[in-house]
Image (tube, rainbow, N blue to C red):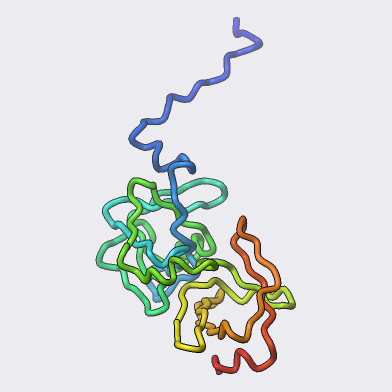
Amino acid sequence: MQSRNPQKQQHPPMNPKLSKYFDKSKLTKLGEIVAFKGTKGDVVLRLDNPNYDINSQEPVLVETDGYLVPFFVQEDSVFYAKNGDISLRFDTIQSNEDADKVVRKPVYVSNDDLVVDEDEDDEYNDFKYANYDVFDQNDVLLGKIVDIDDIPGNPLIIIHNAFGEEILVPLNGAEVLAENDTIRTIKLSIPDGLLDINR
């Protein structure tokens, strides 16, 4: 006769060699897939930190519907755009239909496998608002700060918006209205005409 209170099934413990790929405390967020391109399922990865790079020998984890799904990057598919984005192809994604399923999804990598290019511009790394999301005085999201151009007398912050476009904002004319270091956001008052440099 079956027991009315069957014991809850116990799942076997995760292999310690695999746990580093699924324990978020052991992961670093590389960035986010912002688009697919071409016709073979290539995607565009926007990095959270311009110093990060891809290690095609180890998997990255794409968070989809609350699950971390591992993908390997095809080494010969990696292309570095001038704006800092990385175009790449995952080994199991062969079509734009499949690629579209990972667009707007965050990408993580094991802390052990994180590649950091220490030769990047130290000036940007020391910039207080590096990698902050920028809002204007009307609470409109302009994009993420990805670099600075230290032009003597007129330094510029370089922002990438959601469409991959570059926006230049002269620091001398913008006023910081608010900042949140916890969620890495900054609100700027941008006078009319200050962004005409982008036209």
